[in-house]
Image 1 (cartoon, helix red, strand yellow):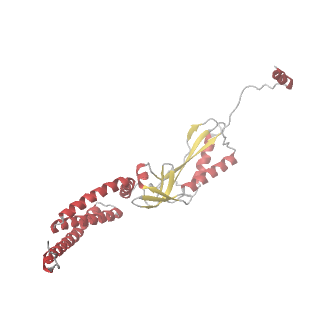
Image 2 (cartoon, rainbow, N blue to C red):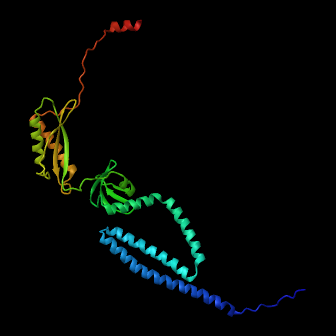
Image 3 (spheres, helix red, strand yellow):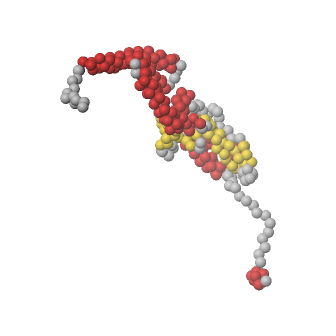
Length: 293
């Protein structure tokens, strides 16, 4: 029979080398990480910030790139510290897991990434800025703020519209206030029997009297079309889009010319159709006779 051991003696000294080794490894990891992280953060971020500002990048992008650089420096510091401390196996497993997670997140966040990249280009290229009145895909609004994922705009009905940046980056965007001058064009139809010169003088005169209309370029009213029932003159006036409201000026222009035409007897015909030929009306007896057959 095998005798049963009555007691087990434990020697604490046998665990001391392993404990010292573990503590040394951890301390070495922390020291190396702190040194690399602090030095990298100080020198790399300063170099990145100085380089971007020298190229006149937007401060929003500068801050974003600097923040991203800090994260990258931290990851590199962890990797180097783990290598120096002897965490190679753990580091390899961590890298494999991180790669798998990055791939999964990349597929799941394609739209988010697309909006983010589009936001970077919008902020850098500045096709529009805060306060601009823009139009895209049949929509319009005044830019309230531009973020890295979305752009928020206020419509003229005082509604807030949030648009993904990828939509704006891929659409033809019209910036109505980019230039110092903008033309307001309105079509006016007159009858074929009316005097074109009289109508043109009335349009030009009324347009020039509106507050906010520029003297140069001066108002004009060329004939732009011969419709089915009207001769079309296009009234053209110019405004400063940042100083005058396009919608208000256009409304005043329309009303002023309509009143002027009415006072001078200039016709503004609406579409009409003329029927030619004859109509035969049968008597009641003829209708009954036809029905009896």
